[in-house]
Image (cartoon, rainbow, N blue to C red; front, side):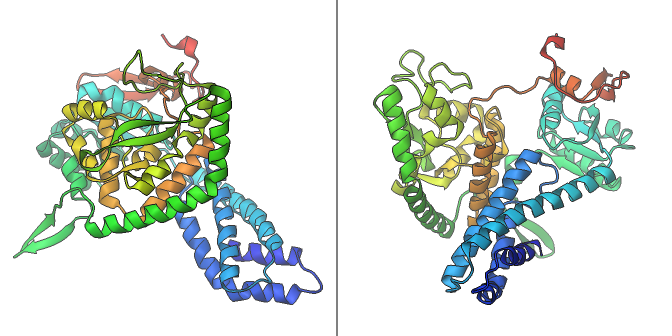
Length: 465
């Protein structure tokens, strides 16, 4: 309704004595297609699921959505030969849509905040996981609830603490027999359960349900893409990378000249990385570090304030412009647009020893961006990144790839897709930020608000011991 009203309002504001009837008729003839395209854009951008996002993120999503709707509208008008639909009206519609989306979001988010109460959370895991689990929950930007207990995985002990709890989060370290009992308890008490999946649980995600006589089975396939999916993915990669290279060609020239003028040659450097089936290839990047950056240190991961990064390199890395040459890797077939980020051989060997499941991410081509990059953070552990990579393989589809690409663009614009970022709050800082204290009873840790009643705010570094 908003989309159609925006175009109608734009035409009224843009009306001229000579072409007014033809303008309206041109829109009416394409209204169904424009509405369908707009719905697809809104779904792809997750516009209907942004109540828990920050206002900055909401504004970016609404801007991108309105812009994409405008582009699709011009394309539909051109293909339908409806040249009487003026571009000026489309621009006015963009403005109406943006402010319309913003108004709707204000109303919806205000309503949700007024009608939603905080939920009490119970965390279950081994004692040594306490600080990590609590920190992960509190670090979630969508966190609106209250951590009430952390309990070791003992079904008999947990049963007495389910009263007054609204959600239960369970670590992947809990043994299967204990996990089954805890989940049954939660189901009996109508409490939703959230578990960190193991590899086999990811493998049965969306698996086929079969019956052997009167017994149900889940078919567990290898974590790979079928030949059909690989062909579709390759066609999409070629088409998208060719279009992107044509559109971004001026950016390539500007970036190359900026590096050449500020820091000399080489402009582009290559580095060995690993892709599908352990194949080693040369990955291309615009140079963002000083020449021979690893001559004295060897292979090391970059940090946020890495002294090896040049001044122009900081800007390139901030907007991921240094990754643009990888579109040529995509055309060559070394990489895909979306997939697990390619690691260097030395890190592959190291991670494979520590994490047995790491080998599964090499079942698909490495990607320019990936699910782990848009859902995780730079500081996300390799063990958790592999779970995102496996979930991506199990859920692969062209629509899923487009969503990840759009999410990548949005995070780059917002500046939340930082590399080298390692400024996570510590456990103590997060307790202070959310006004929490803990009472350690051995097998149970109880959390409660400080009696001072201070509200959540910024952490003052000087107050942390």
